Length: 331
View 1 (cartoon, rainbow, N blue to C red):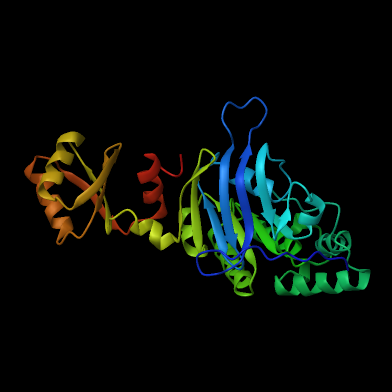
View 2: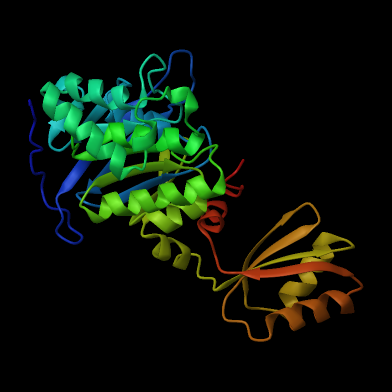
């Protein structure tokens, strides 16, 4: 079996872990575009971490993953995976990466088992070893009973598991998951989350792109919030949420003029540190307020506003994104 060994990069300043992915000034302009899809990106992903690129559609996440995975040629800048230059040595870099893309890329002409077997042969596994590895992965991913079936027989979740099995077949240094749960039902999404945790627990370095804030929060050691091709913030999910300097997020809906209501609420509850309106709703980020809900309801009603609904939650990564961009992550 042919193989390429990942070269050890310089230790990261935080935690001492080697950097498995490094980029410098990485930029991509598509023909005819006035702005860069990815704009001078500098990034380090440590070995054995799950690193998330979180942002709305069009933020540059998939283009970034494409450049790191050799599918997209950068306009400028440099990128390394396992110490290998992905532009200068793309064939060598491909030996170090596994990719699960947004779309189903399974070969429809092959059976479930053959999709794995021929992938192994492509990466230099001898026939007996490739067959053994395929059977081992089918069993691990609970697909053995479908080994001889067409991939058309697989559900969306099963097809996604097969794509992950294929991506790790050659034991890559880095696994790229590009929007891996898009379109999956909740049960399949949770099953894939468990699989990601299991792989990472075995030491697999994973770069995950997603626009699901809960997914990034649940799975990632660190998250880079990305928009318009640039990283706006990068840290552990808990630290990103703590950066809001708010302990509670309140969404309040009421009848009446929103501006006068907001003015009254800010006067009555000075612990409100940030706010925004969306339709008939006010979103308030509050720090350290006691008896928060009764105070808000009383202030609204005293100013002649009928409260229709009020909800209280902890800050989320979407709140962080809104505070950075002024718009919702789903936009």
